[in-house]
Image (cartoon, rainbow, N blue to C red; front, side, top):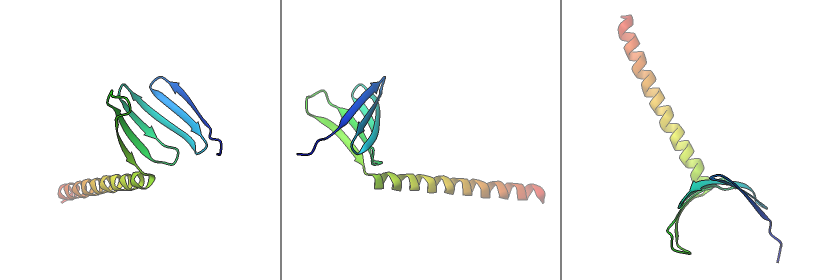
Length: 95
């Protein structure tokens, strides 16, 4: 059985974990925690207070990239429509 390495350091609500796959970071307090994995994934966790039972949502690195691209496209679309509106108003004042 191969050896595994993991080292964790907690500073306030932040926890940094170093393992064989890299560095991960998480933040949270009470029952809520948000984790940035070393491979680019993200995890949202909520503890229930019952030992061994928790609610967890995971985003794979691919899902994270898709969400970022969609957010960027929406922002670009908003900027484009705002720019078009500005151009229309400035054209009216020039005439």
